[in-house]
Image 1 (cartoon, rainbow, N blue to C red):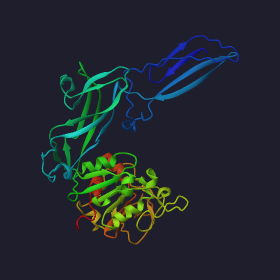
Image 2: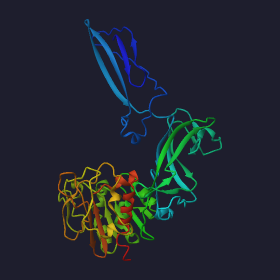
Image 3: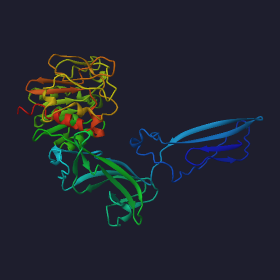
Image 4: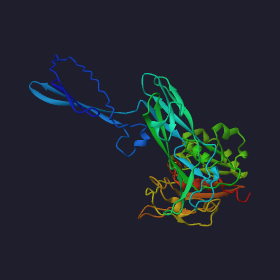
Length: 436
């Protein structure tokens, strides 16, 4: 082995030393590569989806090997995460969505609507100490960290390699400022910044920012909502942002609990896949609808939804509804209101095309290809040059209740803080309440 070169985190350098390896023998060379302080942070990965750091920083090594007078390279590469000494692995809620329903804001339209949520907004920060020694410091919200005193912020003590959640509160009012461009409003401040500061230091070890979004969403009064969680806490945070009383339902709650106390129940996206035993309990959900409840089912894949005798999966909807593989991949695809007077588009929020602005990634997946005449389809959309798809939002009366199936990716928009998604979610959970 004539030389070993590093590529990646450290400046390119070469280690040259002659080594002779006997025939049939093996050789191990251990090299220590120190991450320089200037290396770009690559965690949490969700914050680096589009800047090239999603899979970490590349670290590569090339060894030049000489055999019988011929030299050839042997290369190896890996990727490694670069983290600060203490990482803010997640903040909840993020983004912070302010709504009329939860925070009592008046209607926007006048500059300086300064009715703020009190006594404050509670955030939960998940912190990870990556060091091999304890960390003692504090979490400071906003402001000039260099001027923060040792007594400021929320004290934090972490053991070596410890991970845990820390709760902090952001005190103070938010103000709504009219947005003359879009005709809506936005919150001031529109960002809440968290700093982790080590004791006896005026420099932040790490910081994280949470966007503040205003969604002009109202809900029917005194709603109680149950939801079956699938893969993340988007529904929990979204329902909290709407100010409704909400409870996560386990499959045993669906199977044997009292569902009548909920005005609406939501099965999260791919919920029947996440909880296969929910299929056997589905009749209780349909009975709940028949007795006056509202059931909302977010999108599923065809092989998770369509009737399948081998998998003992019956028709899950109250009336026949078969999914296909059609999708709308253009997140800006125009929306047509095919039934503009439908209650889902009018109560308690008047839905307009503006509510479908600012979407991310796509409109929807696995649109229904066939559905019973009992269903209404108040929306239609398509990618450019393709046939119009009308099944993205389906609604039907069933007994004394209401049933909604939607193939649109609401969960992705809710997680991104798209205001219109909160307004439509508010209408879905309020569906059928106007008459009552």
